[in-house]
Length: 503
Image 1 (cartoon, rainbow, N blue to C red):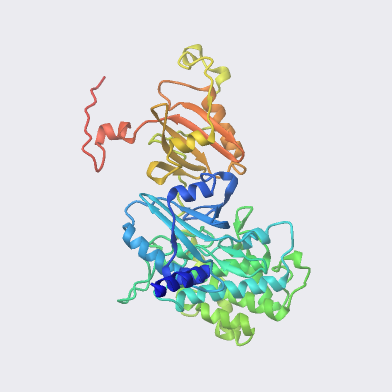
Image 2: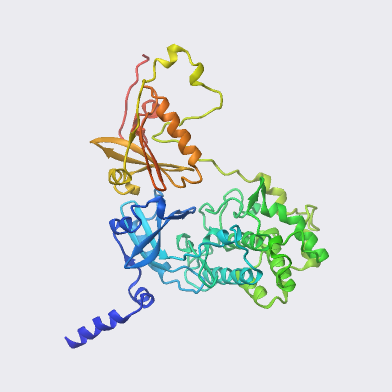
């Protein structure tokens, strides 16, 4: 009995890190995480990535980041996902964000992560303050070490798949902390498989354009290397990944060629630095960038090679040999008859734009298509007169959707998600805007149209919610199986059948 008491006493003395390593990440309920974030209020939103939204929360008296993953149908069962989460929680490195806990309830999958109030590299590069050269070099090294560890220091090997400046957080000492790696898929430990046959989740500028991966767009560790090269470009130039329609990789290519051949870096380096940089370090970083971005996939360096180059700033020829590799910075045929990979970028499929469809019905807005002021009396007679939208509280809509549970999610578009809810015993569709500050005009426009136009052949707007940073619209609910398509062709995976007469 005394031994048992001592075991519990020792367990109480364990640090959070020791507890996580010994017992795994802590399991939370959906209700606990919903309460911790104010029911996923936009007031606590930290951002959104390719895998889901991140909210600030308070758990066990500490600030944490809670990531609410997007629902992906036909994914692995919860048992496999739980095993993957436990493996990721055991991946410990000074430059990786720690996974502290998780929640798996139905379609709701959430991760509890370390919280860093200093925000991301993207925020520091494009904010009001100037990020000096020394911390830029420190961040480049730290993030490279993190990726090198994921690729070669842990088992199974982890491919990040979403390396961006927004996924590199900074602590109070401006030490790089790579996040979202836990959402990547793992390489199988058996067989000769060298790619993951899942779509690259990164933003299009960060995504590997090498035609060797086209059209399947499979990803490997070399894809992470390419994305890391884009991050290096951001550190060097201070430029956004897209500016006035030109992506940073295309913009930088001739400037890198000129800088490496002439030694004049003024047309490439961030002007805010005012030449306050170490020239040898800058040249090394530029050479690493060129090797990551402009060499074909199979010729790109490994992350461990980049770490060595950035640490020593010597023997850079192993990564970028100016005599032989400058050919990759031109669009002329190479000696072996092949072409630079950028010649093939026009062949890559353009990213699909997700429509703002809800409930299976899509509206296309065309300027000048209809103007209410000059509509005919016959047409206007179909619209309800004097209709007033209802104002709902955020708490009421939270309860109506089960806390915005993924179990009730109907659809998703670039502005936010659409959830099924129940109000006064009636089903409704509730659209939750992810970033109202950025999309305030779109919200006002949709609300104005919905309040002015009500028709028996439109999905009508019922009400809205405007509380603090939260913007939501409440529509009539129309099930997918009531769409014309389903009446004509039947509903996949269901027994629903119907017959429509000619009338």
